[in-house]
Image: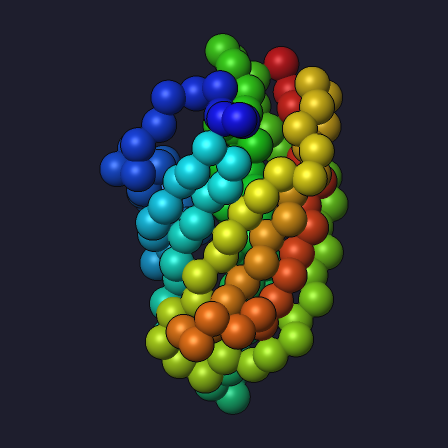
Length: 138
Protein backbone atom coordinates (compact mmCIF):
# COMPACT_ATOMS: atom_id res chain seq x y z
CA UNK A 1 0.00 0.00 0.00
CA UNK A 2 1.43 3.38 -1.02
CA UNK A 3 1.13 5.93 1.82
CA UNK A 4 2.30 8.93 -0.25
CA UNK A 5 -0.32 11.35 -1.57
CA UNK A 6 2.12 13.61 -3.43
CA UNK A 7 4.03 12.67 -6.58
CA UNK A 8 7.77 12.84 -5.88
CA UNK A 9 11.13 11.76 -7.27
CA UNK A 10 14.45 11.48 -5.48
CA UNK A 11 15.66 14.47 -7.49
CA UNK A 12 12.75 16.60 -6.25
CA UNK A 13 13.21 15.34 -2.69
CA UNK A 14 16.82 16.47 -2.73
CA UNK A 15 15.85 19.88 -4.15
CA UNK A 16 13.49 20.47 -1.21
CA UNK A 17 16.51 20.71 1.09
CA UNK A 18 18.45 23.26 -0.95
CA UNK A 19 19.47 26.28 1.10
CA UNK A 20 18.35 25.00 4.50
CA UNK A 21 19.60 22.72 7.30
CA UNK A 22 19.15 19.61 5.15
CA UNK A 23 21.74 20.71 2.59
CA UNK A 24 23.96 22.37 5.22
CA UNK A 25 24.66 19.04 6.94
CA UNK A 26 24.81 17.08 3.66
CA UNK A 27 21.62 15.02 3.92
CA UNK A 28 20.80 13.22 0.67
CA UNK A 29 17.59 11.26 0.07
CA UNK A 30 18.54 7.95 -1.52
CA UNK A 31 15.52 5.65 -1.66
CA UNK A 32 11.75 5.84 -1.50
CA UNK A 33 9.36 2.89 -1.40
CA UNK A 34 5.59 2.74 -1.01
CA UNK A 35 5.99 2.86 2.78
CA UNK A 36 9.46 4.18 3.64
CA UNK A 37 11.98 6.90 2.95
CA UNK A 38 15.78 6.61 3.21
CA UNK A 39 18.52 9.22 3.38
CA UNK A 40 22.23 9.38 4.17
CA UNK A 41 24.24 11.99 6.04
CA UNK A 42 28.05 12.27 6.23
CA UNK A 43 29.85 12.03 9.53
CA UNK A 44 32.27 14.94 9.05
CA UNK A 45 33.15 18.36 10.50
CA UNK A 46 29.55 19.54 9.95
CA UNK A 47 27.96 16.73 11.95
CA UNK A 48 30.45 15.75 14.68
CA UNK A 49 30.95 16.99 18.21
CA UNK A 50 34.37 18.22 19.46
CA UNK A 51 35.56 14.66 20.22
CA UNK A 52 35.03 13.49 16.63
CA UNK A 53 31.86 11.46 17.22
CA UNK A 54 28.58 11.95 15.38
CA UNK A 55 26.72 14.66 17.32
CA UNK A 56 23.44 13.45 18.80
CA UNK A 57 21.83 16.66 17.59
CA UNK A 58 22.92 15.88 14.03
CA UNK A 59 21.19 12.50 14.31
CA UNK A 60 18.05 14.32 15.44
CA UNK A 61 18.35 16.75 12.50
CA UNK A 62 18.44 13.74 10.15
CA UNK A 63 15.47 12.13 11.91
CA UNK A 64 13.29 15.25 12.04
CA UNK A 65 14.12 16.18 8.45
CA UNK A 66 13.15 12.73 7.21
CA UNK A 67 9.97 12.53 9.28
CA UNK A 68 8.85 16.02 8.32
CA UNK A 69 9.41 15.40 4.61
CA UNK A 70 7.67 12.02 4.85
CA UNK A 71 4.78 13.68 6.66
CA UNK A 72 4.49 16.33 3.97
CA UNK A 73 4.37 13.61 1.31
CA UNK A 74 1.31 12.19 3.10
CA UNK A 75 -0.63 15.45 2.80
CA UNK A 76 -2.48 17.17 -0.03
CA UNK A 77 -2.93 20.65 -1.44
CA UNK A 78 -1.75 23.49 0.80
CA UNK A 79 -1.36 21.33 3.90
CA UNK A 80 1.90 21.62 5.81
CA UNK A 81 3.50 19.46 8.49
CA UNK A 82 5.25 20.71 11.63
CA UNK A 83 7.06 18.77 14.31
CA UNK A 84 5.43 18.61 17.75
CA UNK A 85 7.78 16.28 19.61
CA UNK A 86 10.86 14.21 18.90
CA UNK A 87 12.79 11.82 21.07
CA UNK A 88 15.99 9.97 20.32
CA UNK A 89 17.91 7.10 21.83
CA UNK A 90 21.56 6.91 20.81
CA UNK A 91 22.97 3.39 21.18
CA UNK A 92 26.24 3.36 19.27
CA UNK A 93 28.90 5.98 18.56
CA UNK A 94 29.82 6.73 14.95
CA UNK A 95 33.34 7.99 14.17
CA UNK A 96 33.24 8.51 10.42
CA UNK A 97 31.80 7.55 7.06
CA UNK A 98 28.10 8.17 6.77
CA UNK A 99 24.89 7.18 8.48
CA UNK A 100 21.70 5.98 6.82
CA UNK A 101 18.26 6.83 8.10
CA UNK A 102 15.16 4.73 7.43
CA UNK A 103 11.83 6.45 8.10
CA UNK A 104 8.53 4.58 8.45
CA UNK A 105 5.06 5.66 9.53
CA UNK A 106 3.65 4.39 12.80
CA UNK A 107 0.47 6.47 12.37
CA UNK A 108 -0.71 8.75 9.55
CA UNK A 109 -3.89 10.55 10.54
CA UNK A 110 -5.71 13.61 9.26
CA UNK A 111 -4.43 15.83 12.10
CA UNK A 112 -1.27 14.15 13.38
CA UNK A 113 1.34 11.61 12.40
CA UNK A 114 3.94 9.51 14.21
CA UNK A 115 7.16 8.47 12.45
CA UNK A 116 9.95 6.09 13.46
CA UNK A 117 13.42 6.83 12.15
CA UNK A 118 16.22 4.28 12.56
CA UNK A 119 19.81 5.40 11.91
CA UNK A 120 22.48 2.88 10.91
CA UNK A 121 26.26 3.16 10.49
CA UNK A 122 28.31 1.96 7.49
CA UNK A 123 28.30 -1.58 8.92
CA UNK A 124 24.46 -1.56 9.08
CA UNK A 125 24.46 -1.47 12.90
CA UNK A 126 21.63 0.42 14.59
CA UNK A 127 23.11 3.57 16.14
CA UNK A 128 20.09 5.69 16.97
CA UNK A 129 16.32 5.48 16.90
CA UNK A 130 13.90 8.41 17.00
CA UNK A 131 10.17 8.89 17.12
CA UNK A 132 8.72 12.09 15.66
CA UNK A 133 5.18 13.35 16.19
CA UNK A 134 3.93 15.89 13.65
CA UNK A 135 0.82 18.02 13.25
CA UNK A 136 -0.88 18.53 9.90
CA UNK A 137 -1.80 22.20 9.32
CA UNK A 138 -4.25 23.54 6.78
